[in-house]
Length: 85
Image (cartoon, rainbow, N blue to C red; front, side):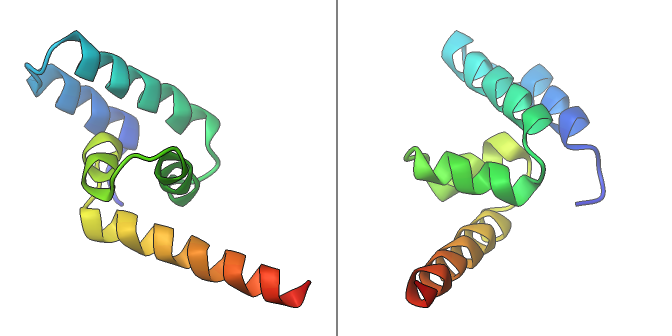
């Protein structure tokens, strides 16, 4: 992703008229972005708490395909780690 994710989220928030709940969701994602070491890690963590791929992509500022790829890579890595045990 070539653009700054924080700037993307801020633009998205400025354009959003979805109300206070959506704004809080976006602010929470902004905080998580600052704490996460990578976009993929953030996507996987959001998926693990039950957020669907389309919503993750919207909040993170990427495409659903990119979010799905990160989730699938994580699933393969977990499966591989589990079989090594």
